[in-house]
Length: 406
Image 1 (cartoon, rainbow, N blue to C red):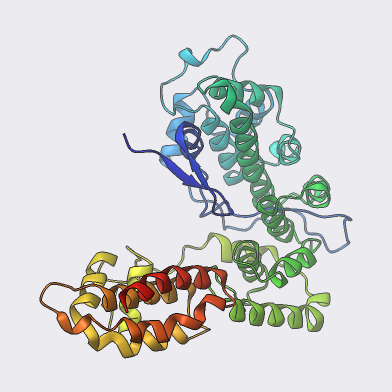
Image 2 (cartoon, rainbow, N blue to C red; image 1 turned 60 degrees about the vertical axis):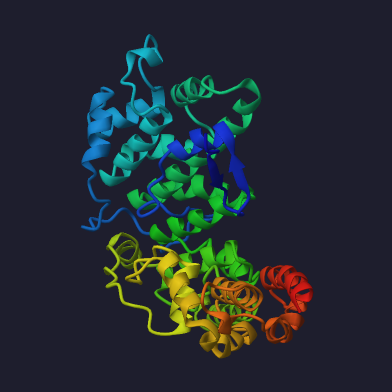
């Protein structure tokens, strides 16, 4: 039986039965992606608006709520978030799907945001601060009882975090500025960037700018986790796109940090978030990508690094096979990509691995692509000290193989 795996925010692998339960809690990242916060209510905070931009209706979500006895109406959903199911209800009294009943809580939060339910903001505010209602705690306990006792504390903590994230984003989409005080507490006391970064976006969606300085600080850390996430939120808030992306090398992440810092000093102090513009950037569907055929060696490597990417008309395996079939003809391009310090990290890593493989192993009837380990060794030998640890680690492993081959 295949082991179930999942990766958390920092790339660590979660395995086994607990991962299966956590993966079953579906968090719709398209509409629900970031948090809210504020310390003091400045005069320019906006009240709820009548913007036509809303979360799209999901028939599956609505059907799931109705099957569990919940009509998608603000008062009913708010009562459920405050009290849960009826006190006499048992898990066996409910439909078998979803297996995790906490999913119904997530559905209720999302639907409350879609309906712009101001009535739900008090209970959502408490949930955002990590204080679920007794009814929600009871539902979490139902799901927790399906696990081994040793796994329950972690599952409950992860589940509460997922609910907090949904509550924070829902408050931002509802747009009631009074919720800013609840979110300001999250921003002030919370240490987890997975909650603080979305909190800053949610506050900005209400017209508050309290989280902007935190986002700038995160971008200036120039790492591969919180910096790209903070940059994406700043792009949503400001409309500016200075990067970085998660797979940018250190040099490009530092350059992006300088641009954001310069913007903050020149324009940021007077910047005022606009709710309508933020919602437009968040909720308008992205343009559909038209797949195209890879035209260069770099395109093929990109296809290998990002298999099944909608940008490409072929999958990663086909691109990999095409690269192998070209033999030594790709070596010049591979050397350039390997040496490019500004290259995408995943593409550069694939170039190192492919160069090593093609110069140390025969590929059927293509001997021209083999017996050149010294060439690859000369191209890769200095990368063990590369500023990007991912490249350095890959290079050291490949160099050990090349030393044996040459």
